[in-house]
Image (cartoon, rainbow, N blue to C red):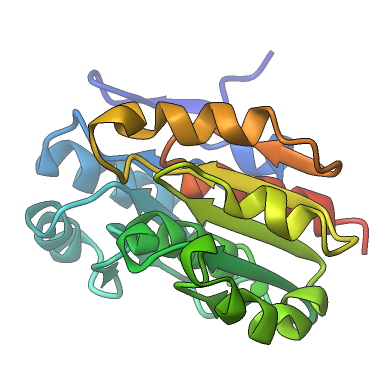
Length: 225
């Protein structure tokens, strides 16, 4: 079997992933030094792929920026992206996903999902701060949510919002619990368990704070459209 990865000593860069999965390797920055992230990003770029790096701080971005001048930092999402104009994925305006948050405190995770989805070529409708504490806000925005192909719902605290939306629309819902909340939320565990125990059908749940994973799953759902 041919060697489809590049050995860097501290990492083995998977250049074959785009052929297997439909998109290139994504760099998870936490636990890596800025120099390591920059080196991996450079190798992905040199191999002809776009670059996406999640959970990046500004120091890491500045390191990547030295290697890739076109790199852009999405501060709220904590994502670094770099796209080749000739090879970038064309955004499909006919396929839209909605990213809905319960509160403003959920924005970092929601933006991680939004930026990832846009990187993958999806059109994103952002609908923020429509949690169950003010249900009238959700009702007013329901028509926009219903127009989307997939709905990613991001919520902390008790995590009730996906169940509410799941009982009102006929679209697939990807629920993302966040680590937002007071002590008894157990850093997102309460929201995770609420979402997994929802009685509303059509809801799938990803891990706590995993906006990236939710966006990728949403992209896979829409690929057949």
